[in-house]
Amino acid sequence: MLFNVYNRMDVEPVEAFGCRVRDKSGEEYLDFYGGHAVISIGHSHPHYVERVASQLRKIGFYSNAVVNPLQEALAARLEVLSGCEGYALFLCNSGAEANENALKLASFTTGRAAILACRGAFHGRTSAAVAATDQPAIQSPLNKSHAVSFVDLNDAEALARALSSRRYAAFIVEGIQGVGGIRVPSPDFLQAAREACDATGTLLVLDEIQSGYGRSGKFFAFQHAGARPDVISMAKGMGNGFPVAGILVRDAIPAREGMLGTTFGGNHLACAAALAVLEVIEREELVSRAAALGDDLARQLREEKGVIEVRGRGLMIGVDADIPHAIFRRRLLRDHRVLTGCSGKNTLRLLPPLSVSREEIELFLSAFRATMQSLTSESDELRGY
Image (tube, rainbow, N blue to C red):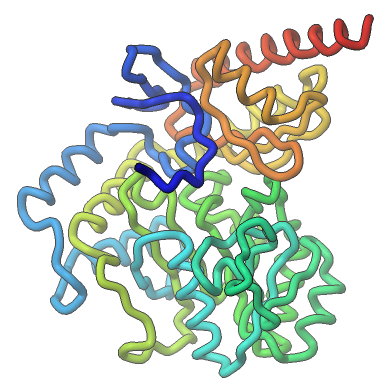
């Protein structure tokens, strides 16, 4: 039996393609969640499938004890497509590991043992990553740390005051807070963070695990602000479902043999998957597509009756409405076969594949409107209107 720690949706997918998922009974679902923003180029993309299958027929795995040219190819391709020239790539397996390595690297580099993060942040479930996560429900007593402090997102004055102590190895912030409710750091805040980190010898770590790989309409969300971080962590959309993650490290930070390590990270199959994703992103212009389609989707959602606020960038969108998100999400699934997520106090989280079509966006909007009308009518009846 399973040690069940998940509140699962009552869906059992057996196949998927593009922005669609099909369950064991043949029912088809519109995927506006992408499995926590993991599906970037669409389910079962033909180029991705062929690239991974072809690599598996050659060699699927060997450890970092040997030379792997695919790692070099991935680093070079990523540097060009992301616009992050002069950054070096370290590969691992998951977002939590990426952040764990980013924070460890910051501590090695500065010689400091404290971390500053933002309230509402989510950085993962491993030791240092969960300590830097402002989610008490997932912090066991072992994970709570006096070495981690928090400031409010977008409070530049509080950030500067905290960093002035010169005790922090790193300030870590998400490109867009995902679990925290799709909260966007302002450009002024990220620029102020860069200045305060420079003034105090602190490393600026940008967590782009959910917001990266084109989702925000830029390759990385921090690029909307123009602030250059010291370390960028990434995962999720990087492998389109295959477990691969990494950190990009600014050229001013030296590497030392043995300071970081991983058994599975950067294996041949993972690199093939990650290269396939980059190739599709470039060929299909998915970054600019996410910007255009996301802006249009957000605009239309803001015009809907019952919507309180729409936040986010590109195809990373949070919707606050009059209806509790848990109820709204269940109805979208039950009545319209639409998969969505939720986060924050009352935020419907939309993270469709970047390959989503305009027709599929219209299908989603139709389902959203019908659900809003149905639930609003029911609420009015309960109040006796």
